Each structure stands twice: as structure tokens, then as C-alpha cells.
Image 1 (spheres, rainbow, N blue to C red):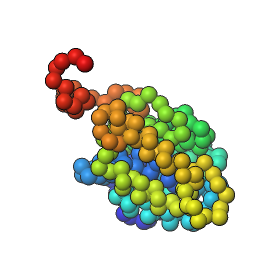
Image 2 (cartoon, rainbow, N blue to C red):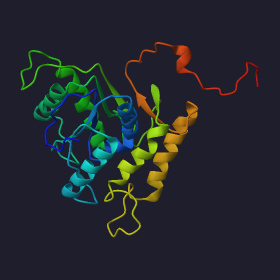
Image 3 (cartoon, rainbow, N blue to C red):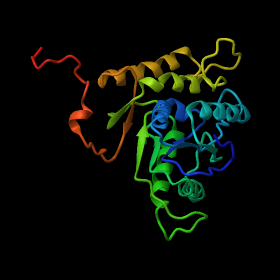
Image 4 (cartoon, helix red, strand yellow):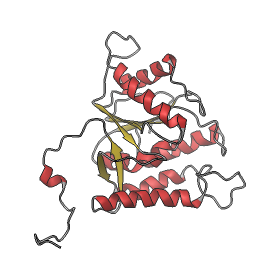
Amino acid sequence: MKETKAAEETVDILAVGAHPDDIELGCGATLVSLAARGRRFGILDLTRGESGTRGTPQIRAAEAAAAAKALGARFRQSLDLGDGGLRTDRDAELQVIEVIRRVRPKLVIAPFPADRHPDHVRASRLATEASFYAGLRALRSGAAAHRPQSVVYYASSYTQQPSFFVDVTDAFETKMKAIRCFASQFYDPASTEPETVLSQKTFLDAIEARARFYGRLINVTYAEAFVSPRPPTLADPVAAFAGYEPGFDGSLR
């Protein structure tokens, strides 16, 4: 992983989060699965997480770098758009546009537009609008115009009716390894810092439970879910549902 401040190479997927650790929680296993298929991805954190109750921006930066390495990211870039009041003004938009144009992703993955944390809501809007504006040739910047094929959304606090699932059974433990890189944020019985929603053991238990629930819906062990404004194309609808009813022999039961 490149540990430079600015992304320097093109990728297939750009995963956008409001805070360090949002990507790991929301779509980390999907990114690991895609990397195993030869897809290249990068991570863009829109803030440094400076308003968090636990840890410091410096600690979180080190944790984020370790987590990105665990996931297999080609780079992780951090902007400074204001944790606890994420900016969506024109300057903020142009910063995201510049990243999109530089790394030229086919797909952007962003937080779902409705969530408990207002920063997630703002991050979703910023990523979506910047992805469109990045394709305007008349908008001059340091890189050529580029528009991703689509923006799809991962869930954070609130669950949504998914448009599609990704089987992440083989990647789930790597996702949890990356999450555990954020030792300042999550469950640590030896920590003396104030307890938060994230630092409770039940929080990580819920992350696994949700992945298991999504997996059950498609008959795998673990899955991550995404919402897409436009449905993905299925080349083979028959193959897409293979394994949904294991052992079914055609009789009704």
C-alpha cells in the first residue's frame, strides 16, 4: 500500500468513508474479495476522526494505515473536511473530484444516504455528487475528466433493503482483522478510555451477526449488502441463484 498523502495510481474501486474505520465496518470484506479476483481498490477517508471520543487523529492515522494494509488497499488517502461537521461546500467537493479524476475508479462505494451519524449522510452526498461532477469536461482541475460507472452504498448504523449481496465468507476474518487494527475505537477490556457505542463488545458481535444474517439470505456463511440506484446486470440469472436451495430435488416441502 502506498502511504503517501495523495493517491497516485488508478484503481477499479474507490471506497469512501467519513471516518477512518467506516470502510472496514461497512464494506471491508467485499474489498478483500474483489482484490482476490484481481480488482484494485483504494480508500478515501474524508476526515481524520478528530472528534472521536477515543484515540487521537495521530493514533487513528496509524491504525488506518495498518487496516488498509490488512485489507490489501493500493492506497489510503485522508482529507481534512471536518469530523463532527463534515463539509460539503464547493471546496470540499473539488477535493473529492480531484481524487476521483486522479485514480479513475469504475465504481465508487459510499455510505448509504440515510444514517444515524450526520457525517455519514454528508459523506454519501459528497461522494455521489463529486462522482457526477468529476465527469464534466468543462470543469477544469489538475486531472482529466472522469465519471465512475456507478456509486453504490453500504450500510452503517441503519439497515436498508439491499439491491445485491456479495458473498464474503472467505474474506470475513480479514475484515475483522482490519477492524481490530483500530484498537483505540473498539472493544478492549484493558482500556481506561470512556466507553462508547463502538467500544462495547456487543458492537462487534452485531457486525458479525449482520454478516451472518445477510449470508443466510443467499445461503452462504457471511455476506455484505449494498444498495444501488440502478440494478446491476446479470449475464446469467440462473447461475446467479445457484445454491439458494441446496439439495432441492424439485418436490414441494
